[in-house]
Length: 244
Image (cartoon, rainbow, N blue to C red):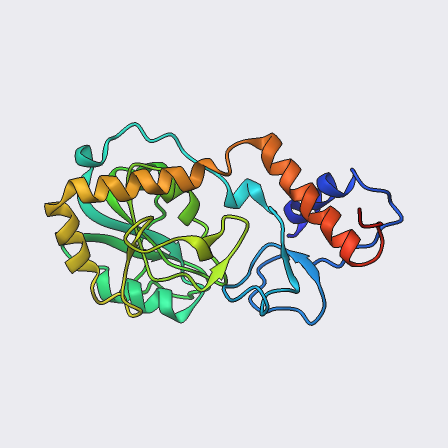
């Protein structure tokens, strides 16, 4: 299950001497460890509260996938779409609220249900979701996997203020600039969809800002270098490498 994490971590560590030691946590991390660990995700907080959560770009094969979007925003279906596994109660409540709404194509993909629930819908690929003007991002266990490819598309990202962050720097995203912020209970989703249907230029400006954020992560050489510098800093602060 964790091979994608481990192989990418090893890809970085092979550039350092094998005598160096690193604490690491693989998978979805939602709390801050008591001592410094390298990991994929952490709660969004201050630098002091997160000082033991050392973010690396991990599981890129899943979390940094982008799709070619051939449709302009104004050529897409003027509705909101979302698909996600029913792996937390908030996702289920969201799908129950909007599964039959006329402005939405929203539903959970079955996770552990033993029967067909009304909030469940068929799987929909990211490529099909890109046919819609509005794509909702809903955090699962930690971050929402779809956030990155939504922000790299010509669709408008709608989400609550994020609670967790990864290498993608979700904590630096600004509502109204990079995405459209939704209420904590998602109650204003139809209102936000209606507003940006009537104000497409404002939607396109947010999409352009989202593209600028995404471009920071598209150069493989730069991404590798920054990850290596993070690890080098870890080894220096832990006393394993001499500080210059």
